[in-house]
Image (tube, rainbow, N blue to C red; front, side, top):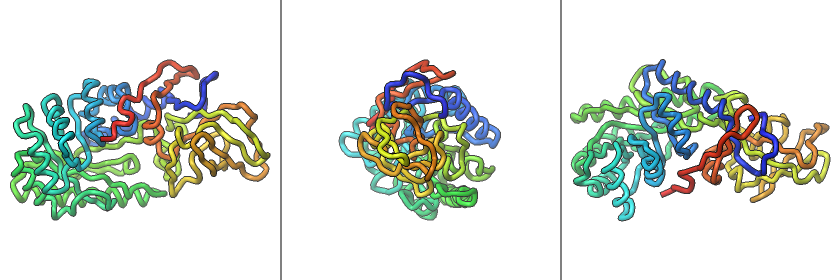
Length: 363
């Protein structure tokens, strides 16, 4: 995001509509050419307008992280949703999951026998069957069972009355610099999902969905066990994707517009976009708290709620007081979740405002 519209009230998140549309089209074309179904993860953008763009470009449905996000997108007209998370169904979620199951084609992640039993009890008698995918750990070591243990979870889910549709994973260890990390994660994903799918088939399950994929492993996919992809960050990209080499600067579709509010010394200046705008995520591969395209080598090395202190390389010229600069966040999902709306720009002018409809839908 190199060219911000004039006259912006800052801080604000600005989306370049042309870059966004190109990113969505590129990923959709890559999935089609590889023979994959595409189910983008909407936790990145949380916007109904972007969801509609993804569906119009060929996505078969959306992935979400929470029941709350599923409710928002169901209310926006999306009728095929996968809660790609091992949902622990308490009394409140039982009611909400049941309501979703009555209105949309719903898939939910499970990774334990007890979790599957609770989910089955919550949706028993729903108007539509609730499909579940067993989560497998493919090397990220977050949630998910070993491939060899997927059958036990699937069996508990079937006994609870759920429709076991397949397996899924998140190859999060593909976040690393260089193509080797992404290549290894993609191959790990294929092996883990392939083993888990075969374990289920050996127990008589009809495995219809083998779901994986991420933005870093995009371009590393190949025909094999995986049939569905769930990338999310690609719609905007961010400073981490730049740092690990999964996108170019002209493929970054979102930046925070921030005003230079102080120039306390020749080697540093202060912006009005702090942690409440940029988020506080640090990346092991990107220096500081964000990337400034206009100032190569500059580092956001101090971050408070409403201040970002930027340090310049020795001898480098800095901006003038009052200038408005673009800052690419380290991890774009967090700033979006902090914002009420995204300003949509095209041709150097703001043409729309999109409400972050699923902002704060964390339960």
